[in-house]
Image 1 (cartoon, rainbow, N blue to C red):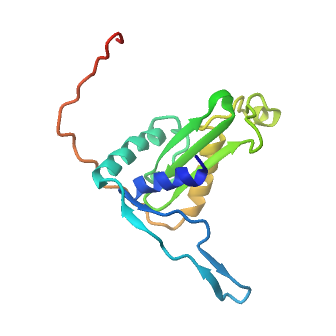
Image 2: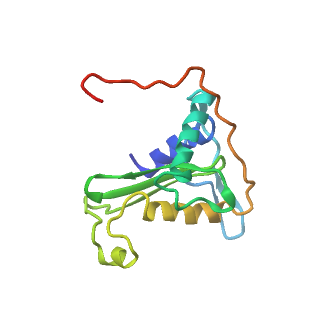
Image 3: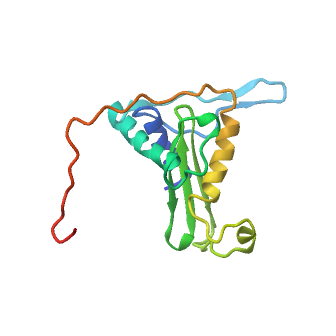
Length: 176
């Protein structure tokens, strides 16, 4: 998946199941401020039921509140959700995170090869022996999001719908 694919999927959760086609350029202006190009919203589609998206976002909030990204919450206790990821041998590290207003995906890796990001002197000097999704990707995400959301209202998702059935533990044959 590309960073755009990850951000596109996460924004659908952030938008309570409404998917909008991703785009890269919002507007182009010339030196005089004349708008040469303005993005026009393309398809908008309810691809997930809202309650499913809200539940998924609620689960992913746990990554930032008490999971692998817990050391990097957004400023002002802004509600956010996300997912860290690390490929085998630490060759690629990811974080995709979102608020109701903005979704950002961060990738750290070597674009030319599957180079393990382990014991790299510059990273070790920064206290990072091996790059994982909860190191540089989540730090980059937080730095960007805090700046991008300055002055943007601090809003939260609706509370997830309470489960309609009791929790149960499933036992698989041969697995305890």
